[in-house]
Length: 213
Image 1 (tube, rainbow, N blue to C red):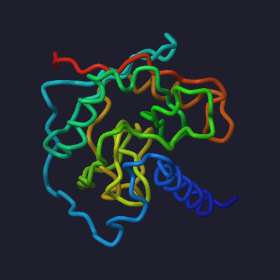
Image 2 (image 1 turned 120 degrees about the horizontal axis):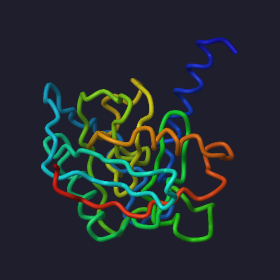
Image 3 (image 1 turned 60 degrees about the horizontal axis):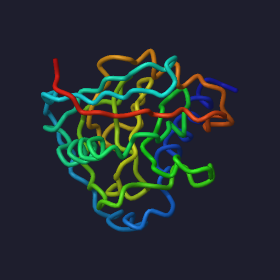
Image 4 (image 1 turned 90 degrees about the vertical axis):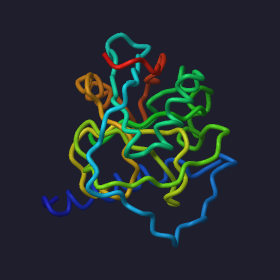
């Protein structure tokens, strides 16, 4: 396979990976609303870290912790949703249900049940979040909001980017960045899997919001 074809394959796969992840049963997810409206892109605004950070503690000690700074000045609605759900304990016991060399993705409550076929289709009972696009590039460590094809369907799911991926620039909401524990995110991406589904659950013990040191 040539380098050009391989690059194209990775690009298409990664876009499908994110856009289709929430394609199912969440009652608050309109499938076709607002697709024709091009969302505004916030440009020329440098991200400013909140005075609080998110700490992901994994159930498996080998996966350690991941610390994320959050950008309310870039994506205030998504940051507020993420903080609210974390404080409610929503993410505790969920899994990183899809992993690859490009991203690790989690935040779906369906991953708590015993049915793997519904993973990636869930969200919270809160309304969806509209697109909050910016010109922050999707570099290694960027935290983005997963959504359906409709750009205004972010809800609870999130992902951590493991490598530079320009195809996502201005196409997904950036709301944070990993500041500690990217080695742990890389370890998670390397677990045994079938396509992008880990063979064993990669469980998030907790996500907490704590003051920035």
